Amino acid sequence: MEWIKHIILLVIVFLIQVLLIGNLHLWGICHPYIYILCLLMLPITLPIWAEMLIGVVVGGLMDIFSNTPGVHFASCVLLMYVRRLIIPRLVFEPERLSGPITSESIGPHAFFQYVILLTLLHHTAVLQLSAWSFSHIGWTLLVILVSSMISIGVILLFDLIQTRR
Image 1 (cartoon, one colour):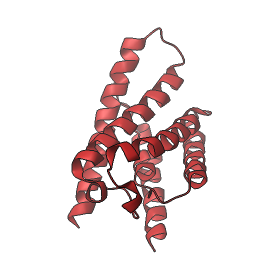
Image 2 (spheres, helix red, strand yellow):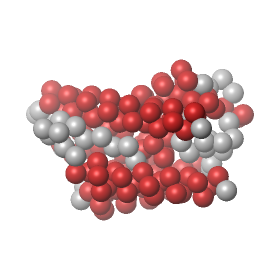
Image 3 (cartoon, helix red, strand yellow):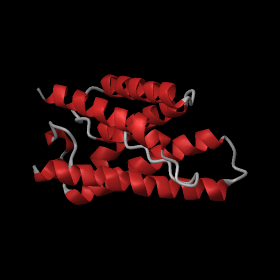
Image 4 (cartoon, helix red, strand yellow):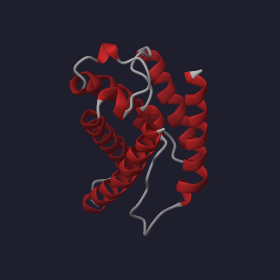
């Protein structure tokens, strides 16, 4: 039953990302990517091959809908790989995690660090691969920071709403 909820959440968040947020570009400086919420919440009990496969599918679908060949694909695979490395460093007993990763399951402080690190990593990869140049690094860093802050805010707000239920 938990998987059905997660798949429905993924579809809803993905549709919001593609139909609503994908068309939201505030002065060319804000490109939030909230679809990573579903990747961040995946349980740690998944085998690594399943995590990578989910990252490939989600990134590939995002590339298809946003017309960015390989950018989201590479960023999501990187996110899923690094996610596996970061969780044991933030959580003292990662083997006890069985459900989705939320602020309740790993603690608010660890969840906050987890979301910030992985969102910055993902947004840096997406936006730097999209820019494909270091000639405007100042502008790219500004876009990364603004987009990451908005995405982090939405992800933390979603987690707050979920944990209050």
